[in-house]
Image (tube, rainbow, N blue to C red):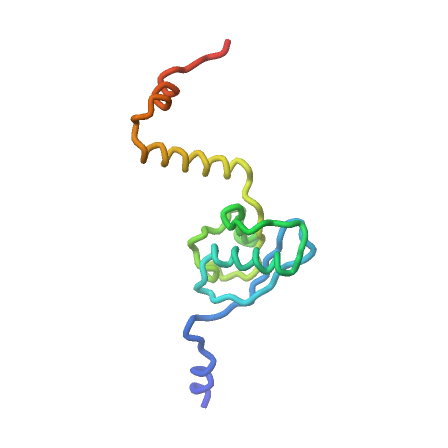
Length: 136
């Protein structure tokens, strides 16, 4: 009898978790249910949509690339966007904007990748690399 009840309660998508996400500057946490196999990036997207739908302040926007998800219990490092939300075994998180210097580094990396894909035929790129002006 006990085995049949356990089989009925198992979800084919994996276990589901009630998670709580605090947003810096907001009045209280956002709570919703997710599959433990869901990616962190998807959880950030869901949190931003829920936050906007509830009309909370401050207004955050909807670009998931501008935010990082932290777990205060695990340390100061942000979770990777490709991790599963259930991989750490915790249910309380903090959603924060990316620091400005991280956004600049990502933009620089994207520009460098784009310039590599175009090749070195641009005389402006060659000129900027070859001329170095020093200030006294």
